[in-house]
Length: 218
Image 1: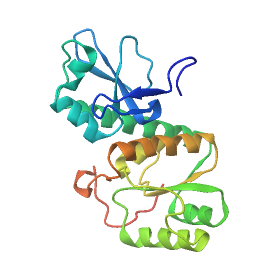
Image 2 (image 1 turned 60 degrees about the vertical axis):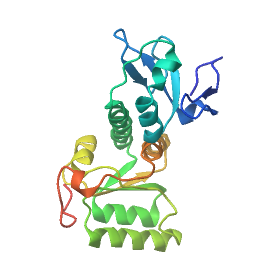
Image 3 (image 1 turned 135 degrees about the vertical axis):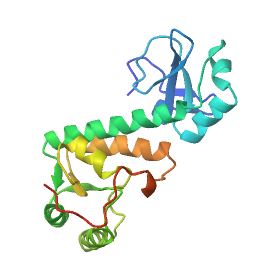
Image 4 (image 1 turned 90 degrees about the vertical axis):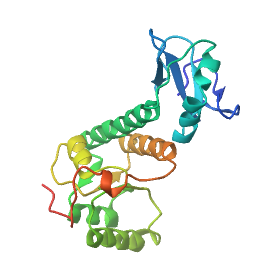
C-alpha cells in the first residue's frame, strides 16, 4: 500500500495513462545509472513508473523510455523484464511458504480433495507437471463443490521443484490454499505475477522436471 501522504496514482511512462500505484511498477536508478525494479516502492531516489506488465517493461526498455523518464542516462538491459519476473515469482513463492507456516496450505492429493469438499478453500495449486488423471479428478471435485471449476483460482505457474523448495516438502503436485490472511496474500502475489505475464503459465518445456503422473507426496 502507498505510504501515508503519498499519491495513490502515478503516470506510466509507456502509455502515459494515470493508474493506481498497485497497477504499476516503480523503477529507480542505481549508483551506476542502472535501472533497478523497486517492487516494494521503498528505495530512495526519484522513481519512474511502468504498468505492471511484461509487455510494457519490454516496450520501455526497447524504446529507451527510462532515460526520458529520469531525465538522464539510464541503463536498462534487455534482461530487465526477466529480473522483474524473477522478483515477482520469488515474492509469490515466499508468501506461499509463510502461508504453509500459518497452517493455511493443505498438501497431499487425498487431503486436498477432502479439503475441497469440506474446508474454506480459496485456491488450488497445481504443479506444471501435474498428470492428466490427477488434474481431471481435482477439476471434478471443484465442479461438485462449487458447480464451476473456475469458482476459485487455480495456480499453475510453478514447477514441482519450485513448490517443493517453497513448501519444504518433496513431490508436491497438488495443494489447497485455505482462508486466512497469509493465504490471501499469497493469492494476491500470484495474481500480480499472472497479470505481469498476461495470464500465460510456464510452458511445460521450461519446468525443472517432468512428471508423467501424480507421484505420492511425502
